[in-house]
Image (cartoon, rainbow, N blue to C red):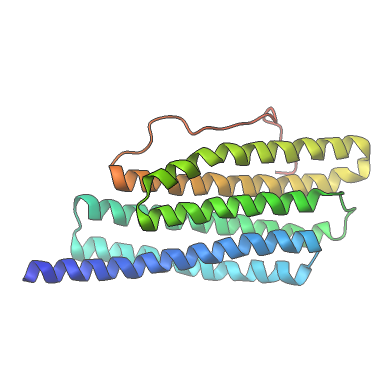
Length: 236
């Protein structure tokens, strides 16, 4: 009877923490899409709102970490329950970092509105952001559903993100060679594209945590990556 009460309390506490994770994920997804839209429409006010909204993401991560620490101290979870708590903390960390990338994207908008507009570039960035956000959404859904198959699918999609990023990178190189006035804005745009690509890496990391949570093992094969930029960096 007492054991059942303890288990019920743990489950309730864990559900509360998971609700915070999903709220955090929703804020990050919205921030990424809004930041990409602000860049595309050159809306500095919207970009500023994205920057200001990052504080809420940071607050949620603090709340999640505090709640997880209490779970570890008061409930002493073992086996699968312990994996769940550790997974939650790692997912929260990945989301917080992704939120930082959205904020960094928004920071560049004010600068880019004062520069030469590179044809098609902001639209390409926005498309990349949409694909990455869907990937993050699916990774979080896989966590809630404990869906290893969906998590594996997210993991393989990281290759598609890399290919999109590489294509954008090549477009920026072409624009810079065609017109030196494009060098400055393309450096900023490349920084943005790379940040979004890194969010894809974090979405993949979330998916890998789901696999660990369900199976007890992290994937032992190398994450599929595609990099045709030759390690080059612009404005990082």
